[in-house]
Length: 484
Image (cartoon, rainbow, N blue to C red):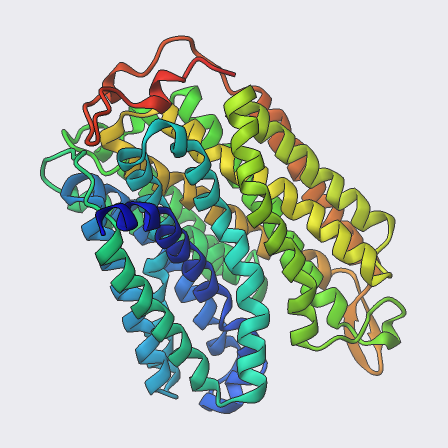
C-alpha cells in the first residue's frame, strides 16, 4: 500500500493542478446566459471571472508562504477544500452576490500548483523531480484546454448548476486523494506569519488587477482606474519598505531581486501574456459569424474542441521538456519554448481563416508554452533555498496571472479599436485579431530575449541544502544549479 501511495503522488498532484485550471475556465460558457439566469447585468456577471482572478492572485503567494511555514500538504488540502466549498456554494445558489463570493473561494485553487511543486521537490527522488515538476507546470494549460469543452457540454445538455455539482464532486475526489496519497513535506521555515505583509500584498494586487481587468469598461483615464493605479504604486512602496524591515517577510525581496530569481519571474509574466492570447482570441475568432468574412460560426462546444489538441500537446510534451532541461538546462528549454510560441503566432498571422491552420497554430503555441512553463519552476527551485520553495513558486505563478490579466485587457482594447459593422452589430475585424496575434508574438520574443539573459552560476545555493526524507542528503535541483 505504501508503494502504491508513492506511485500515485505525482498523478494525484497533477490532477489537482488540472482541477485548478478547470475551475478558472468552467464559468466561461455560462457568461452569455448568466445575466438572464441570475437577473443581473452583464457588468455584474463579469465579476464571476474577476473575483476568481483576484482571489487567486492574492492567495497564491500567501498560501505558498503558509505552506513553507506550516506544511505544504496541510495548506494544499486547505486550498482544495476552499475550492470544493466554493463549487458547492455555486451549485446551491442563483444569487449573483453569493455566486461571486463562491467564485472567489474557488480562486484559492490557484495555490495548488506552487504548493505541489514544493512537495515534489521535497518528496521525490532526484531522477523523478524534473519530469514531475514539468508535468505539474503543464497542468495549467491542460486543464484550461479540457475544462472549456467539458463545461460547454454540461451547460448545453443539463441545468447550469450541474456544472458546479460536477466540479464539486471532482474537487472532493481530489481532496480525498491528496489526503491519502501525498506525504507531508519535512522542509519548513518556522516563524511568525507576516500578516501586515499579506494584507499589503492583497491590497496592492487588488488595486492593480482591478484596474487592469476593469479599465476597458470603466475607461483607462477615468477617476476610479487612475485612483487604483495610484493606490497600487503607493501601497507597493509601503509594502516594499515593510518587507525589507521584517525579520520573516512574506516575500524575501532580497532574494527575489537577484537576477537568477527576478528574471524568471519577469519571464513568467511575459509567457503568461503570450500564452493566454491563444485561447482568448481563438475562442472568439472561430465563434464569429461567417458573415464577417473570416469567422467559422462555431458553437462554444466547437470552440472548446478546437483547443483540445493544445491541451493534449502540453500533456505529451511535459516529459520531452524535462529531458531537454536535464540535458541542456532549464534556461535552454525556456528560450526554446518562448521561440516556439512566437512561431505559433507567426502561423496564426499567416492564415486565420482555415480551421486546420487555426488549430495547428494554437497547438504550436501550446507546445511552446509547455516547454516554457516546465522550465520556469525548475529555474526558481535551483535559485532559492528549499525552505522558501512554496513562497517563491507562488510568486512565479502570480506573475503568470498578472501577465494573463494584462493580456486580457490588451486584447480587449485591440479588438474594440478594430471593429466593423456586421448585420448592424459592431464585431472585431480580422485585422484586430491579427494585431492581437502580432502583439502576443512580440511579447513571446521579448520573453525569449529575457530568458537568454538569465545568469547561470556554478555554485549551488548553499542556503537551500537540507537533508530530506527518503535518504536524500542534498537538494538535487540545487546541486545541478550550474548545469546549462
